[in-house]
Length: 235
Image (cartoon, rainbow, N blue to C red):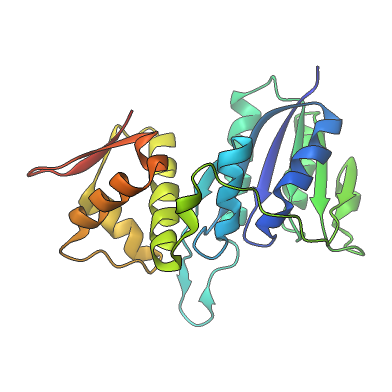
């Protein structure tokens, strides 16, 4: 059966599209993996895809440009590099579904089709965009608001401030462990959180302990180890 991988630029699409993307992708074959690249503090509704559909989250903190604010191409570059890595390392993947609302992935689509002789599909929402001509097929996602997937643990969405901190922590941990790290020290986690405007204070360890006690979603995958060298390890 045809194996397809879904690569989502989550910084220019709404996470409310998650279910729609998954259902449409199944028409092209068996879903091998689904990956979403985004700053999840600004797009927290993508996190629901992690719970419901096994979506792999790639947390991409914004890089500040000198004059024009955040660089809008950070997720684009991360996604393209990741796709090329998959093309070389996973020959069993037959087709790539790129979910994005811009033209930046035309070179990637060309490489998929011409250099690796695989299928490249585009899922997008902006009709009239000339980017679809670079793909084997393009699918327009509807603009209707799809109800956000309910998380298994309803307590995760109780408080906005705490929820942002939790989502950022989950995304950072998932990204670091997927990149091969064996453990994440609190100092490293703290620096990553500062990059996305979350500011750990002197009670950082206590705050994390409260999150681990309150939200089972953390305990399902990770273990917090206190002491002189406080750190988080994957179970």
